[in-house]
Length: 434
Image (cartoon, rainbow, N blue to C red):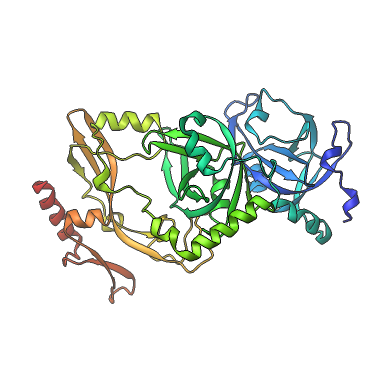
């Protein structure tokens, strides 16, 4: 397929008939669903992505359709892939509606893709791909229009709520944390530590699956990011500033700019010197540094007000310890890399976002107990008590063993409580002491 059959993004117009656009994906949002106003009880699905076909021009694309079409289309390509978009609807931007939640683009228009009229496919033309691939390393904003981490820290709360560009290197990538909201929706959160020549550690928070998948491919201390339109906010718990990836953010990895090249050289120098390793701190705060005290009702209220992780002390007692579950529900195996729960005999992690999916599986096995905590203000239900804290409380450890009788992988407790009844009896005695 010859490159001249494509129409340039800069030439797109609503009057263009059957346009065909070739571009590289530079941004992509998660799939979302909304109730269909015309069909009660039916949901419509959508997601957006941004394509670029030249150093100066890129455009937002929105896809709408049913569950199967949208999720299938979304899973067919990722950021960094070259795609062909055939027969999209070219329409004017609407800054007061959906476009204000999309990345800012130089085009006056946006593209709409539907199953009935359009087609999106991976580009297979080598010449076109060779032309498009270098564009992934060109920032969507002026290469000199950014804040250093030192600038952000110095301005402090004056930048609270603003959207700015940031140039920084990746110091470390945290553990993926998954959660379920009060209305049953599943979510995820991942925190990246950034650094530059002015600040040794600065948090960048990612909530979307697409952003998380992108940053999980990065190599710490070897990747420089130009983060266009990151939201800056003040975190009262940390007493400092935090950057967050949002629906308008586009991340350019290892930008082809002078400023990024200088930062990459600095990152390489400090990485080889070991200075960053000396400055490393664990992701979770030290227990001794936690001083905030909460009642159960205050914990519930704070959790509802903010999805951000927080730490505190509560004076309560264990009002329920799940002893009626089978041992297989009390002792569980998780992926060593992403902490996703897996079956005991599995040979791979089933988490789509796991950074080690293509690597040899490594798992850890430990206690995974459900407990309730109660004080005079209420009860926190189904709290998780996991190893190694659970092992310290119970006075037992878990060791892998092979059950010769069944030939299956099994577990025994280091305190010789291999029988489920003995485990329950030991836990009941412990609960009485508590």
